[in-house]
Image (cartoon, rainbow, N blue to C red):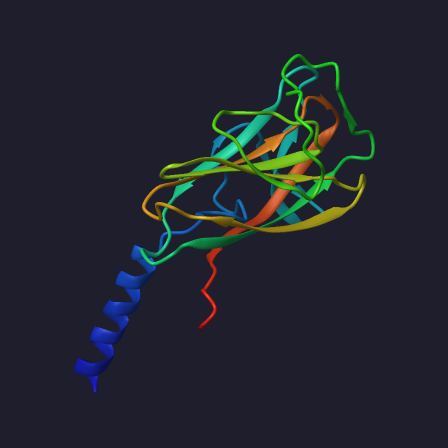
Length: 184
């Protein structure tokens, strides 16, 4: 019996390491695995990364990770709480003059900062860059979900991009999961 369980446990450990998805998406280990803006805090009992918005510059919280080798598409979910005093600064020189609408998904060959309360930017292999633009409600948790293409599951870079403005935004429960293709 031990000889059967040990290989199964060993295989599960190998599979888990081969499928290294978002690390520390709940910020329980501080900002370990993350780069960029924010400090770890508690909001409504959840451990979060809180970003004090910069009046003129966008801020980012990013992480590079891998997905299983067969991954062609992934689902990203996260929770974001916006302070009641949040205000977007559309006078920031960093705001790109793009006609991108909240809820839309876009591909662009360069870094861009659209007029939005929050956007996700994902780079994977030859796909540079995919964006998803969100509109958020002030003073409450916004539970966000989107799917994006994966061209190179060995190197995915995801950035949560916070706008130029005033107020704070807190993020937690960040996950990326492979989306299985429908059987044909």
